[in-house]
Length: 77
Image (cartoon, rainbow, N blue to C red):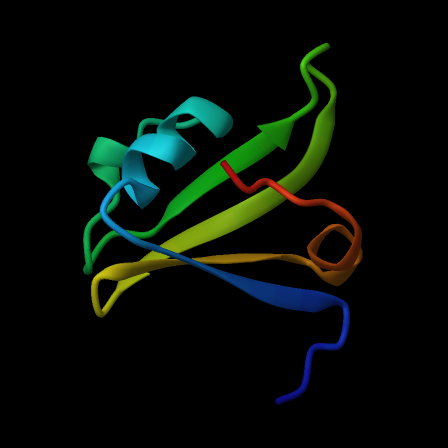
């Protein structure tokens, strides 16, 4: 099934989880390979930029979110 309105962002590396913990609205300690997590990425003013679903897989975190923020927003350290 194709879902063109959604995109996937891969986050990997030794500090990926700690970095995301400081950027997203939910507690990443809850995220496991068997438990996904719903979170928000907010502006410094607290406005929601994107709602996303996080999935842990093969030592990386996948964020499923609307494709427009995937193309326009950068949340690199």
